[in-house]
Length: 348
Image (cartoon, rainbow, N blue to C red):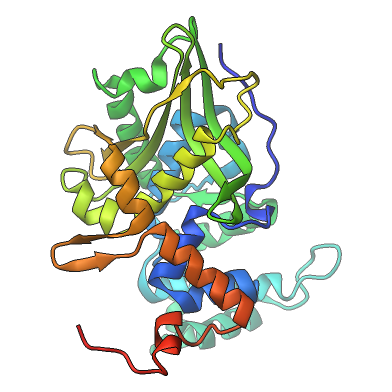
């Protein structure tokens, strides 16, 4: 049977996630701004086209019934680019900043365009920009932004939606991966997008979002699948699992299930929780999707750290210890290692 889980706003749950641990390990400054200063910083590198397409695939495969609550499909074939995209975004911001309480615009379009032109960095004149803007994809995109963002919807262009549809179809049609998302709920309990709170992990409470959990009541096993849509699914280990510290995510998610933090609606103490499997699709949709099974040594490496191609990668234990030290001492501008060595580090 399939279980529907009532959800809160995941991002409003004030607990660390595996993404936060990964962020701290790769960019302490961003972690500090996000988790300590509570700044909302939009970074184009963090939410790029590949991320959008991956999120679209997640919605189509795991929560298709909620698609219209998350996205608005633009009439544009593709998103504006370069300075015109900056101008369009700035024009939208200027519009929002000049609305009265009834939602009426307080200033005329020429004034808004002047603000956007100055913010966008165009070198050509405002008149030239407006000639390019009028009747273009950028103007339609601006109008779509005004429909989507006030309703907390992400704007999706037709080309991106088409790519996501193709990838989703490839996943569902694959003889090996497809059954993960089409398995009948006869002797299984199937969960999608489970939000978990209070995962006890190395002395701290964490949250997690589990993509796909299949409980086999015949075998008494529980299998977690995590869906990834990446640029290079053939070299997933080096280009994503290690590079993006996905091993931290696998460890936290498995811990959540193994310590029975996840509410599956029944007592599963006598069930065997298998190690996670990454289901990895190719964002260009050239290669077929594949599964990457984790082993105990992967879990041990994720906890304690490991060496790969001559470089040491921190494990969850060290990362959590460093976060705890920074919180307790309020030292965010220096690492614990540098502090302990009086600011002297050895070149490696």
